Image (cartoon, rainbow, N blue to C red; front, side):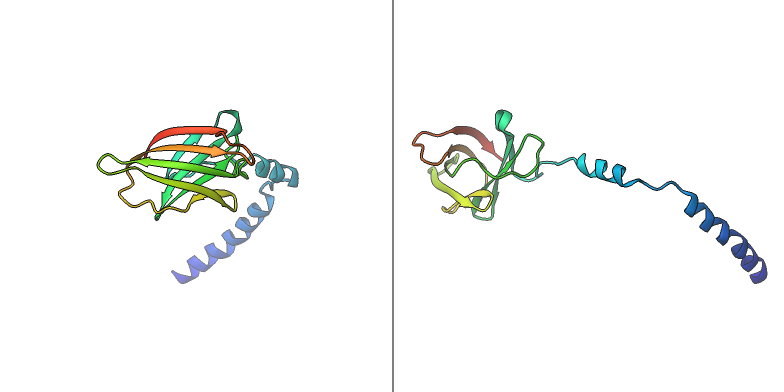
Length: 143
């Protein structure tokens, strides 16, 4: 029985190696094209909101802070075009909470503590550098 197994293995192994060498390989141009056509997705957590033609934002209550991430029209992470923000959280059974958002890398984060449960209405205003009026405003239910 061992002899038959060894004989078959000896015959099939060279055939498998030749078949693997004959298989078509992707050219460097095809690899570059596949890399260019990479599809980006928005985060599954938080709330994703469209910013018109400017792209998307993702608003997430992460721990005790509100984090706003920015994405371009192709859903690729982007640098924010706003410098600061302001959020007001309206809870159903308690007083509203206000939070200032400041830049931290490529995100805007709140300095105020957003305590659970994270079930509230958010009024979010985003401000560009040097402007007193909000550049964008969103009202949505989180989550």
